[in-house]
Length: 161
Image (cartoon, rainbow, N blue to C red):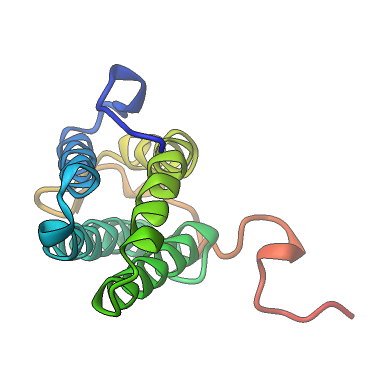
């Protein structure tokens, strides 16, 4: 089973994002270390955090002209849905499936943080975005229009011709 621990490699030099990510890592570790009698509750705590965590990043993206249809936001939606499906599995007594999901989440998160979240953190810093206040200090550095998709047809809602 894969486990995740906080390390400097996950730090993105955006304190609020780093604090949120550190909490995610801690809650995932709690879920992975939970006994069968506490696993579902620990997983629900992780879901509650992750819903707020992803919502926060999605709001930052919208505030800085990233559309909710971009790949980063879409990945948030998919991962959160899978996590909720894991809670349903646990409610049906399928704790092994939930433990497997936790292990996969421990593998997924560093990749997400070091790619999509790192790009978002860089974008926010360039625009002088203050995540605490929502103030964009350099609006001239924001994209002219909404950033949608991820630059490939595979990430678009449009059907191929």
